[in-house]
Length: 301
Ligand code: SF4
Image (cartoon, rainbow, N blue to C red; front, side, top):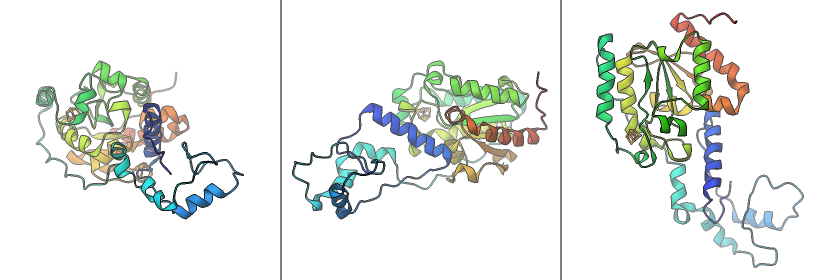
């Protein structure tokens, strides 16, 4: 992939974010920029254009009559750190994951509600990470403090940010349908996200943002003590487990998790909206959760 000489505009950046999220949900978590041999660049420039230009995009390639750039200058074009420092934040270098916070002792069920309230108070009007700058409302979590089933997503979107509740947009509607198909009501489960403030343009949370916010999620998990946790998408499972691997490497089985919970991984509802063909696979994942919970799906009407 080559990069244009000028930073992309907001629309292009949002399109790139959306594409990266799509790849991430497919399990492609790492993308690399490849240094292009200047000789190949010149060669591509001099060959007749007989095929659609799908591999190399050169928005500002000079006109044929314009003087060609010196080949020696080409590497600088691709070594973006100096030229495009703001873009480097999109592909953060991999850092070791900090260990999850120590597990808290279980509380009596009747104390769960008050304990969650205390966590919310601890968060306060949080400015611990940069995501606070663009948020309207902190999206703490929602549902039964004694739920046997917990869903963990990535972070709030526009609707969630406006209402202060998780999964209330189109993805939330789909999640509600998924919960209903399991024979449950939304009020019977608990729903939370890795980060509690909306990332700009719905981008994936940066590692430092997720690491700063996720201790609150672990505290919520330790209070609710669900029997089953369903991680919705790559970001959720990555920050729950501290391990990065393709979604395909997580799905289809249960994984032991803190508090004796079983972790099950499936696609994020937003991904299922983009690729409805994957719904049958998500349903297979939810059936694993149902088996763990001793649930049978309601009879079709
Ligand atoms: Fe605080 Fe979490 Fe919001 Fe960051 S995302 S500002 S850590 S509540």
